[in-house]
Length: 176
Image 1 (cartoon, helix red, strand yellow):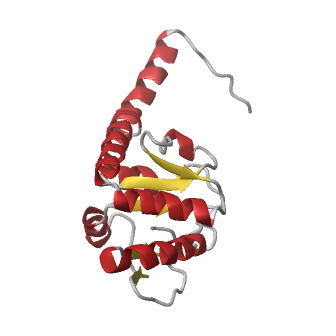
Image 2 (cartoon, rainbow, N blue to C red):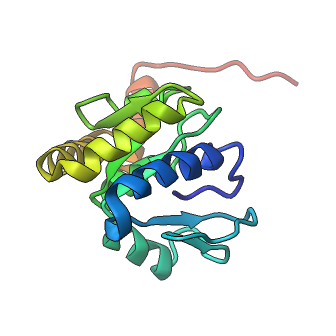
């Protein structure tokens, strides 16, 4: 989980669902929270309050993890999802805003309803127990973000659209 505002990003729901998964799976599972919100670490929960975007420590944490979960309550399309997919993580999130463009249920990750702690628990437990599924979803998410959400590629696509509009004689009117 990476989210500065733990409550708004659904972190409390994740903590509750994780507690149930941890009770079933034991010390086989850990939860790593990157957040500015104060959280008391509990058994199996690790909190990182001072990581910064794109830092070597954050990238390393991504690469040491298997599942990325953002059960956000409200969002548009959080950049942390394509970042996690690019790091090869399996994605779990809520079906709000444009998140479905990255997390396509049972294709590139798992989606749960907002506030559905039981559904979140089921999704996480399913992924913990099914490594082939985790790998398949992670690979599909990586392919999707590499193809459709790469900044350099999309910048080139935008430049092509602008050139085509210019070449077609598209003009804007200016206002004084």
